[in-house]
Image 1: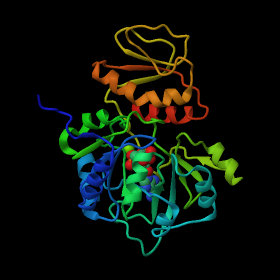
Image 2 (image 1 turned 120 degrees about the vertical axis):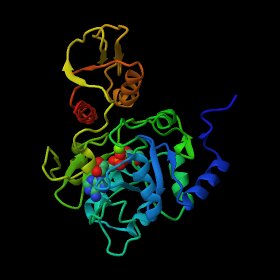
Image 3 (image 1 turned 135 degrees about the vertical axis):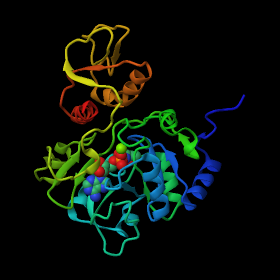
Length: 317
Ligand code: TXA
Ligand code: MG
C-alpha cells in the first residue's frame, strides 16, 4: 500500500542533511516550533520567500517573522537596543517575537519584510529547529504552516491537511508544547504588544520596568496579520456562552460543564496553558466533524487566557 503521508518524516541526522540541502536550494520545508508548526524558507532569498507567499496564499503586505539561531546572527540584519537585550536575556530562545529596525545593509529579502523599515525576529526554542538553524548560514522566514487565514497547525498532520504533498518535507516533532503563536512586542516604536501570547505584557513590564501597552484596535496596520478574519476554522463561533444547543459544538473549560457528545473540553483542570495547547486542534476536530457552529464558554483573561481570547475573537470574525 502506498504511504499517503510519505512526506511526513521523523527527525534524525539523515533528515537534517536533507533539509539543509533543500533549504539551500530555496525549497520550503515544514518544521515544528514550540508555538505552532511553521513553513520555512531562506530569508535571504527572494525566490524562497516568494514561494512562501504563493503556497500560503498570503497577502504580500503581511510580513514574515525571521527566525535566527542566536543574537550574533540577528545583529547582522537588525539594529538592537537595550530593551531588546534585556528581553532576549530573559525570554530567548522562546515564544517572543521582537519588532526592530532593519540595518541599512541587511541581507533580508525585501519581500519577507513587506518592504518595511522594521522586521520581526524570533529565536525559537525547539531542539529540531535549533539544530537546523545551527547548520545553515542564513536565517529562516517562517510563518505558521497553514493557508492564509486558516487555523495554525500544531501537529505534522495539521500541516498535511492544508498542503498535502505541496510541501516536500514535513518534519514530525509531535504536538507543539505551547499551541499558540508567539507574543509579538514592538521595540521599534511605542513599546507595546502587537499580538498576545504565552509571554504576557506584565512579564515584559517586570523585566523592562516600563509600561507596556496592549495594542487595541487601531486603524493603522501594526501587525498586518493580526487583522480581521484570522485563525478561522471556517465555521461561525459564538463566544462567552453558558450552554449550547445539542446540534452545535460546545467548547468548555473546567469540570462544571456536562460531558456530552457535542462538548469539547479544553482542560478539565481549567489549566489555561493546557487549554491553549488544545485550542487549535479542537477547532480542527470540530470542523472535521462537520459541525455548523461553535459555542465557546467564557475563558478567563489572565496570563495566556488573554491570547486564547484574542485568537477566539479573530476566529469568530
Ligand atoms: O509563533 C510564531 O510566531 C509562529 C512560529 C512558526 O514561529 N509564526 C507565526 O508567523 O505566527 P505568522 O507569519 O503566522 O505571524 C507573524 C505575525 C503577523 O501578524 C505579522 O503581521 C507580524 O507577525 N509581523 C511581521 N513583521 C512585522 C513587522 N515588521 N511589524 C509588525 N508586525 C509584523
Ligand atoms: Mg499565521
